[in-house]
Length: 70
Image 1 (cartoon, rainbow, N blue to C red):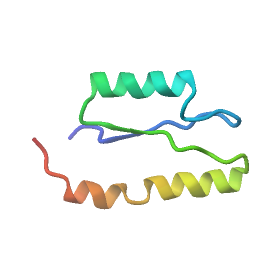
Image 2: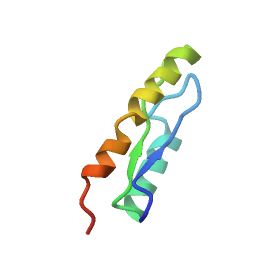
Image 3: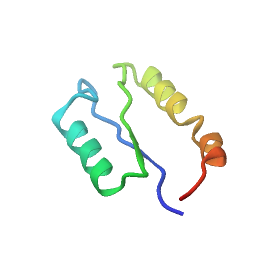
């Protein structure tokens, strides 16, 4: 089994549109086309940021159960 998801957490006061986040997403797509790269936009509040991260990854297990492998 291979890595199916990659979670990239940008720094505070940064965004998924930053050069590093975009470079990482492009690299993952090129080298690992079956891996989904997630980079959620994070609010400044650490508590809200963690809630957003947890919401992003919460469905991954169920998604893997439904996925068919080549």
